[in-house]
Length: 333
Image 1: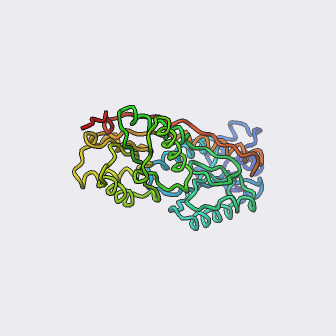
Image 2: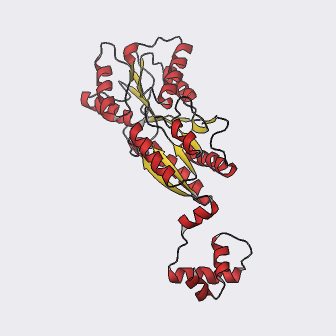
Image 3: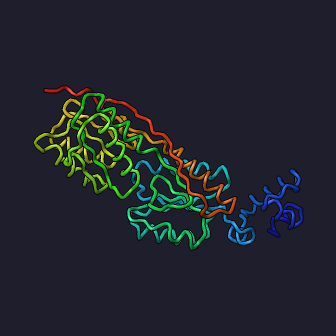
């Protein structure tokens, strides 16, 4: 900083004032200081500055599966909003492991992040350390039981209803659901929406048409294969995320099943490639970018107000049905 002050021909206190955002530095001096900083390749010590001001202007983001196409869009919304507000972002992947999630949270707390955005893994006990560290936290997409703080997600119950109604309106009566991990709130809520739509239409739900337990493609492939080989197979299947969709598509290809002539398919979480498949896939599209952006705004408000816990509230954003070629009217034999 002394070298920058000498080159810019200003006092060290003036350099410090500019770095810390003080408004009293004139434009001419500010330009000279920034030019000197570039010439000397000088970068302020953010660690020392954070100790002085009590904030790092950094947040942590923990997601469960970086290969799931939904989460990169969420993260982009977070990062764009954070950058606009002057915050840096540390991204961590828990790999669907509660143990790794806990390790990532501990690491983020030790780095004194100002707050955390968390999409929980199955079996998460994320609420426990938050009360100890008193760090503001907002849940994203996946919300654990007894959550505190705040959360942003899609309106998954309504999305499940809309998806199921679409297939019912097309004349389908034998509708199956690859439901995913029901310990995770999005999948449990989509199942509830599915049940509500079926009940409202006066349709029974056969136990063998509900496949739950995993969010991975290989497990979905096996479950879908079983569905397609039972005596009265479904005429339509809903996949609760894009990885479950991949397993389902693999199972149909293995058996030579024509989509949508023999089987209608609908998915949640639209991947960029799903629109270009043959046929393009009908999808309930979550506002992933907006979920991320809104989650950061809530977190920022809690950081600035110094609130780590507080009143718990959930912001639920509507999903949109994008009808494409993978669903069509059921032609009864």
